[in-house]
Length: 170
View 1: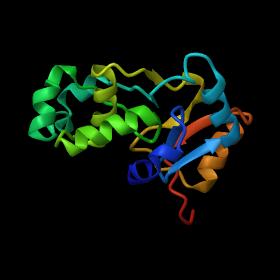
View 2: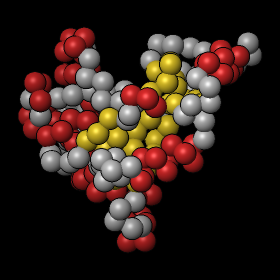
View 3: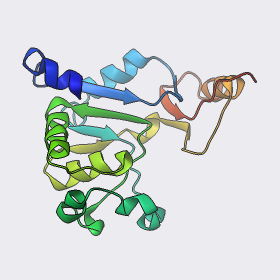
View 4: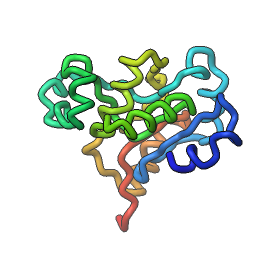
């Protein structure tokens, strides 16, 4: 966000920012992934793209209630949603808005903050196409390089986002 603040005037208003956790692996081309979501109607103008997994189990998730006092006042518990943050794409507009909220003392756990803000404050929030959430997209999976390669081979080269690849020695 500091980059955005320092360079705001030099960045076009429709810029998108992708965030990939370091243990995400893709099957297929990252360029195809970026192009698909940049060009496909319904996705191209989204302010937030993520998995949009608002699991029933997260109703009891302890992080649901974590946040600054200002956050919990502004966004009552029932209005909060969670999304896996393995891969997210933000619009410049949403990032700037979230930066302003943080400067006002409004913040929360990352899996909760961006989706909750987008949902409640009028931003367009979309989920990645199910076809792109790979055979492995889970916070508690740990695949080594050989297992990740097998996932991609099994998919037949189909574009997919996968988590979590822990590429240490097999």
